Structure formats: C-alpha cells, structure tokens
Image (cartoon, rainbow, N blue to C red; front, side, top):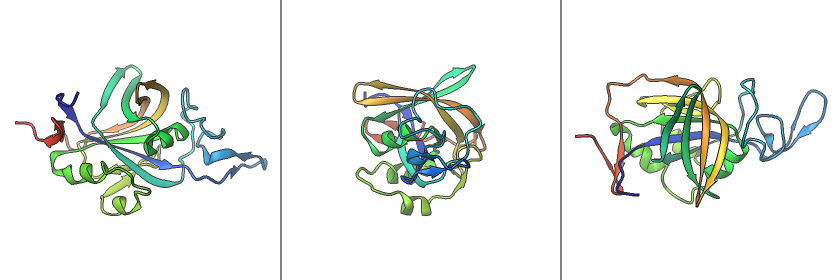
Length: 191
C-alpha cells in the first residue's frame, strides 16, 4: 500500500472534556459528548445539524488515507488506526475538520504524524489556524482546502476504522497551490 500516492490532510477535532455536562434541566450528560448523549454516542448516525459547537482540547493527526465518498450528500472518509488517540476522539466526538495541506506545509504534516503524543497543545501553538464555525475544530490557515464534517458512520476495517463524515462547510482558498502528497514512505511534490 505504501506504493500508492496520496494527498496529505490534517484531521482535527476538539477532544471532549471528561467532566459531565449539565443541561438546563439539571440532568448530566456523560463524557461531554456534543450530541448530549453518553460516551461513545458520537459514532454511527450522529445527531442532526443543530449540534452545539463542542469544547475541549485541540487534537490533530496527519492522514494520507482520505477521500471523497459522495457528492449528494457530500461525504468524505478518513481512515484512522484502531485504538489510536484520534480513533478514540472520533468515537466520542462527531464533529471534526479536515485541512488539505499544501507542499509548503510539509512541516505541519511531520509534526502531527509523531506517535505517542499525549497533547497537541504546543503543536497547535505553532500552527496558524482559525476555528471552524460549525465544529470549533482548528482549520489550518493557508491550506489548499478546509472542510468541517459530522460523523455519519464508522466502519471497522481490519486494523483501521473508516470514519465517514457529512461535509458541513467547505472552503478552497488556495486552489492555485500544489498539494502535499505522500508516496513510498516520503512526502513529495507533484512534478
């Protein structure tokens, strides 16, 4: 599989707070899940478009297995290693974002591909970004394109989980730039 060329994206989400959220009627909702349910409710068939923007700590992951799935409705898919930090977050948090990186953003891809990180706070401090209006997730400034997504379905496929998300917003501010690609274990630029 490493012989296939792939575009490089940064997947971001807000890691939900572990403390229960108390709503107006005083009932607690476990896990701080954005859809008001208990832990894990952010998976298959996540709640409707009226979700509140979540709170929590920024988390990010470089991904090379990302693709468009459908135009109507607009769906995209990212493949995430099972039991990774991002897999855990996407299981609990239905709102996430994608920044399609340019070849000049190779350093960002490298930073967010490091394994074993407990926090991404310092990494995000050095990456220029804005907050998504629908997800609250970080969107990298200068990216080729950005999308905000809501999980529609999660499918376990071997040692990875395919997270399919409905695109809530999409922007292509830098279509004239070249995308960052990954081929044979290295970041490359298009010839």
